[in-house]
Every structure is written in structure tokens, then in C-alpha cells.
Length: 228
Image 1 (cartoon, rainbow, N blue to C red):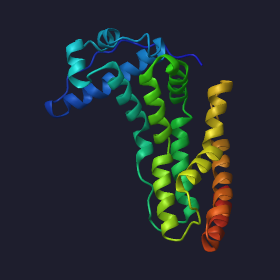
Image 2 (image 1 turned 90 degrees about the vertical axis):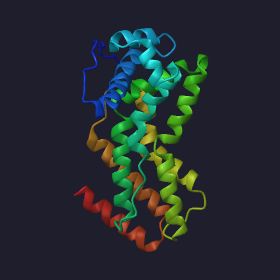
Image 3 (image 1 turned 180 degrees about the horizontal axis):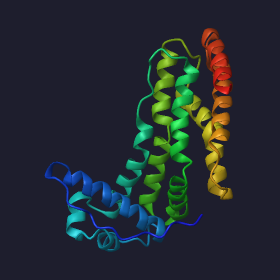
């Protein structure tokens, strides 16, 4: 997948109260452009500093190494996925569908696919990338999803003894295969309606296996309402 040519951008001045956070955010965005264009191994802090119109010393005040900067980039891109799933009384199907839709929107985006390809390609020669890949596997939704499934099992709403395994199964059949296809086959971006259909079907099958009887019925009804 072609990666857009990066453009040099200067970090603009901001009020003192927001200057540091603004610089950090813009530096991460510029670093992402350099990593995607050159690869992690070939990218240098010198190049990132040049494009950001910052000194290396300033960068090292914020991040003590290139690895730390890459880790911050990955954390920033995956931050939306770390938010806990709610226990707000809605049907289980609605909560799961909303969460997985948000995860899919992030991890199936062309930018995220490009970043994941970079990590897979360069992991054999970079321990930093191996650590980043481990973080991605944890943050792709498994952590928040696993915790939520464990709470539902404790409440007696779900009949799953291994929340980690259940979370991996649900993520795999709803999003994991779609992501793998994008990574391996370089397909054009998926249509939202196809992703939504896959998520609804996966949640329906998942709750059909693990939900107690009342919630299983609500899951079927919720899926039919969304499909209309």
C-alpha cells in the first residue's frame, strides 16, 4: 500500500499551558511519517528532529530513545482501545457491537495496517519492534474485552471459564481475520457495512455459545433490530 509522501511541518508556538503536550503530539505524528516512509531501523532521530524543526536535545527531553518514541506512537494510536467496556444495563450484544466497531475502525484503518506491516517486517532485526508487537497484541482489544467478559462471568451472565480465551475467540472471528486479510492480501479498505455485518454475526454466535438464556434471547433480538 503506497504511503503518502511526508511533508515537513514546523511545530507552532502554543500557550504555555498546552505547549508541551502539543509539541509531544506533533512530534509523534511526524515520527510516524518518518517510520512509515523509511522503516523503523532506517529512521533516525536526526531525521525526525529535522522534519520537526526541533533539536535532538529537545526530543531527548521528551523521549529518551527512538524506541521510547516509537512506543509512545503505538500507545497513542491504541489509546482508544484501552477504554473499559461499560456496565450500563444495555443488552450484552449492544455493548459488544459498539466496542468492536470502535476497535475495527482503528485497527482496520490504512494507517494502522501500514504501521502493523512495518512492525511485522522489521521485528526479526529489532527487539524494540518485538516489544511493540507484544503491546499491540495486548492492546488490540483483548485487555479491555477480557476484563469485561470476566466481570460478566462473575455476575453469572456469561458462562465462560476462561475470559482471555473467550476474548481472543471473539476478536479473532469478528476482526482478526479481516485484519489478517488486509495485512497479507493488500486489499482495498473494507466497506463499513461489511465490517458491521461481520461484527453482528460474530457477536450473535459468541453470545449464542456463552450467554445465559435471557441474554441469549436479547442478543438475538438486538441483532435483528440492528440489521433492519
